[in-house]
Image 1 (tube, rainbow, N blue to C red):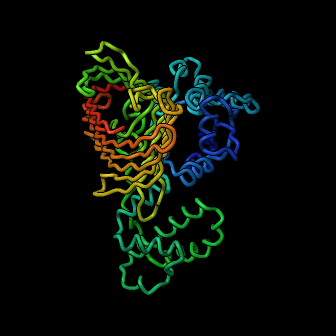
Image 2 (image 1 turned 120 degrees about the vertical axis):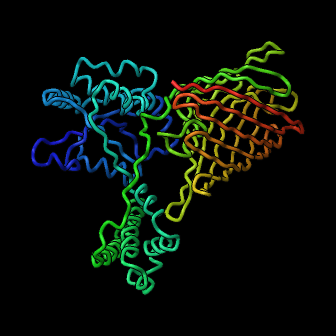
Image 3 (image 1 turned 180 degrees about the vertical axis):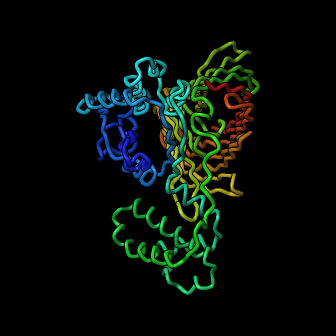
Length: 468
């Protein structure tokens, strides 16, 4: 963000934003966008837009909180940065989601402004936004921080300051099931009515942003809500929005190495796991989004001591999980995808099998800190030792997740019927718990019991996780 130096300097929304992003095809679906973003399939371009447009994009459309970091560049350094931005206005780069992405090129701009900086050199393999922010802070460029919550964050926090009945009234008004001037409000205290009207207006605007086709239809209701609220004198009816205790760059580091030992069906092993990026739901949650998981290029090898054999246990190309709970206001789908190579039982032995798993379902919070979920699963596996070389199945996964500051706990129970190719009923129970010793180290225990081809298998592993 480039702040003006005149009378507008105290109004950041009227500033301009210098932006680098992939020039993506609007017709590409999420899967194609991810693939092309990984392999440099989009051109990356610089642009300058009003800052309020970026805030609208992040906070209102994409529902993402924004952290702002004030930088200590001098006026001459800023002038140099803008001269370089002018040179780049018609230049295209190959955009790579993992390396030369938006956060990477923000660092390159800073190096032009202050040539003695060496920010990009440490991001040859990966450039994760939280890591690039750490680099900026470590070079003493940041003077202060500011938190700007997304519209959904404001609605969610304020919903917890209201009764369940009032939240249901907000949704009813926003959906046209209850009138703004209904008699149901007459007996309510003024501050309670004020909260309902403000929350209903914000929620109605969220719905209109999510579906622009209903924006005009909601205009009359929104006007009535503002008019009703203006007739109430109460101010300060809300508690202040609570900002996260830990910023993203203060969470655990994004690389992980795990040293472990365990037993698989009475066969002892020691294990080594390396993951360059990024985060799973059993890792320390501070600084990360609850219920969200993204793993890239996760290697897990085991050395079985009795057989004296070193084997690849699992290689995860990409694993994504989103467990966003449904509530009175928001009803998102929970989903996951896992593309990997893993040692799996066959009818006669064990083989390395490539697999692609897709999950889709719902999550719900209980007792404020326990997320339960039910996910349908479609599973496609391929291995030379399978009948016809493949196996396709569908099933159901049930589970719960607890993410606390000191510990994390996840449990899954699933059954998948493989009905094409290699036929099998796969049943599995898994329990994973971690105790977080600090920001960048924890101890993890995984217990798994599964059944395939009428045979049971137990796998228990204890590991020490180091984040770097």
